[in-house]
Image (cartoon, rainbow, N blue to C red; front, side, top):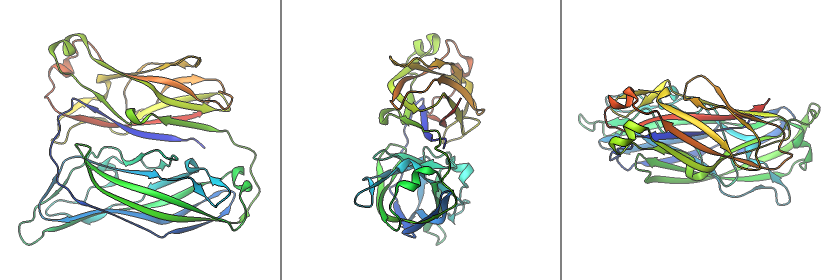
Length: 341
């Protein structure tokens, strides 16, 4: 399985004020795992935001966190074998249309991480707006999710007919990183009689981003920042392990940096470099951000241990795109991926 991690970089910070709204979560509470190929449970969760009155929320985020080990009492189910997949959006706003998954900029699949917050909406590219005039004060946005459990030989270790309890915490933020709502939901995963043949042991790959780098921030504050270029470094921010030769890729999920009021900047404005932290001996490949997947590092097996990289974001000196840019908050969502070399 190729594990992926998604996060957003915030550039030229200029915070705007949003409105406090309600966060709600429903689930069908139960899924049975009956195949070595894994399963997909349709409409396992539905996350929705609603309220009454006028609304102006230019940017917003929704995260999920596995609060405790997914356990049947004696065994632990690996959280990173479970993912949430958004299927559609629906609801109503006056007079605006409900934004789509693509317009919001949601990852098409988000893998869970034990005890670590991951983002279903890393940084919305579509704002939420409602006009309460004309007798239409109520608004809502619904996002259903399928739950996918990856297949693999690892399933053979679990006791048949045992049930694992999964506790997920969903959090809704505004653009100021203020929590607008928290919901906690329990879910049961049952191990049924598994059909098929256990596959040969698969490659074991993992990738994580440090919590302080989940929302990257690069600011240009002074004239010298524009003339000389600016950079920010997140030490030990990228953490990987692999039992085979691996490569790391990065891609922007959007074609450009954009702001809540429609200003844009080319992705190539920002250069990305990862720096191996000793004893990591990986090869590195600095890139300018793009919406085409690019290799940024490669290495040999880590023998089951974790190796780290610093993440560095930087601008070029005297970049005409920045000199001509309007002061604003510009965002995109970056997808990091590890896969066999």
